[in-house]
Image (cartoon, rainbow, N blue to C red):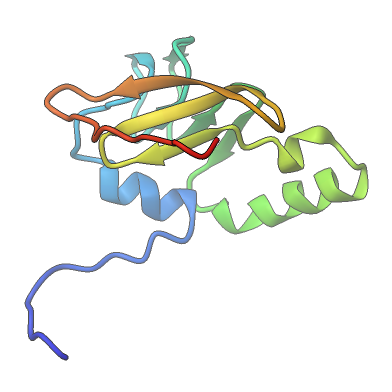
Length: 136
């Protein structure tokens, strides 16, 4: 089955393209203070305050265990960081514990063979469906 549609499409394959797509959106994540900071995109997955003063053309991406600060236009070089992490067997290469969903996000706090504890962040106006796991 094929449906014809007219809609915009953006390939978000880098932090530069993510920053472009979200440039006019209100920040949903993190707390940011920008003073005399131009063309700077900040994405945070924690409640840490991120403040910038007198900077330009930066992309800052923060999660629970790492921070990336890059000049706009340098997103293709993130693969160099990934290669370094792999080469040096750093834990951050496999430590993606925050999962994004349309309704918000969740962070795996503790995970075991018989249990999982998650911290949920539900965006305003969003909701969850009831999920039952009778066989666990």
